[in-house]
Length: 91
Image 1 (tube, rainbow, N blue to C red):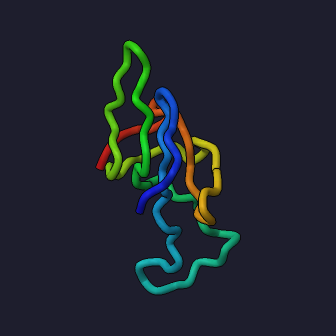
Image 2 (tube, rainbow, N blue to C red; image 1 turned 90 degrees about the horizontal axis):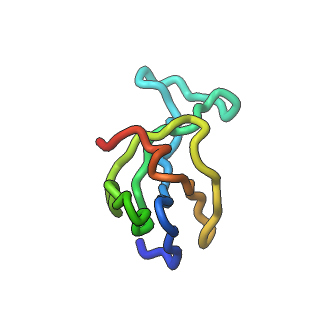
């Protein structure tokens, strides 16, 4: 997928993983009980700061905090934009 959006400095654009619809045992989870995903795929990354190059790149699967980032819509899809420091680690 190609997006015409380039994050600046140490910001990262992330596509959140799909929300779980069912539990492992097959119980359907209602919308009110669904948890926000904490995992996603880096869609685009800035070039980093002068003294801090970026460590994540496009295609990386990352773990981030529950309240990290800001939701934005681009071409009808929802993404999160956050600073690289809001990312806890890579899978």
